[in-house]
Image 1 (cartoon, rainbow, N blue to C red):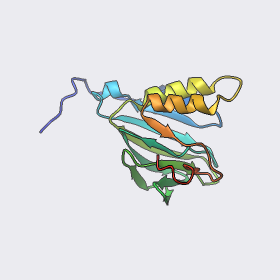
Image 2: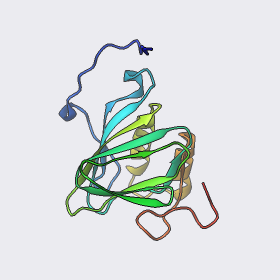
Image 3: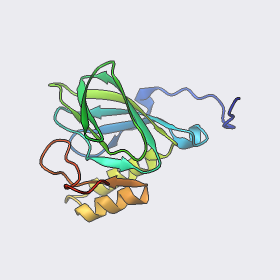
Length: 169
């Protein structure tokens, strides 16, 4: 069975894609947006300085897959932390909490997909929210995530943070 997206073939050169920044030197370059794939998936490169990473979060209706191409990451899926040097793929299914952090001494890079597509709109809105002179309130960050089906947990003292005890979301 074949699925037709109604779109023509597309060639993308990484240098032609403007990075989406979040402060701290983290950047995402979206190579294929949802509209390029008929909504099936988004494909993007994540650049992460040493010691930086994501909050512990859940995509309620989206799978996310990480393929490390440079550096080393720790990727937490549910309660298990996976060491992920270059050449490692880790899949985070929808509904399962996860986070990632660059643990190498040099920046790390991952190629990632989300299914279905559309995560890039969240990335763009997050970048805009973080671009102000002051750090946004936690409730503003959480509300942004919720608009995109993402439940984020405030940091809890470790690089991977996580929900308070008893909070499974």
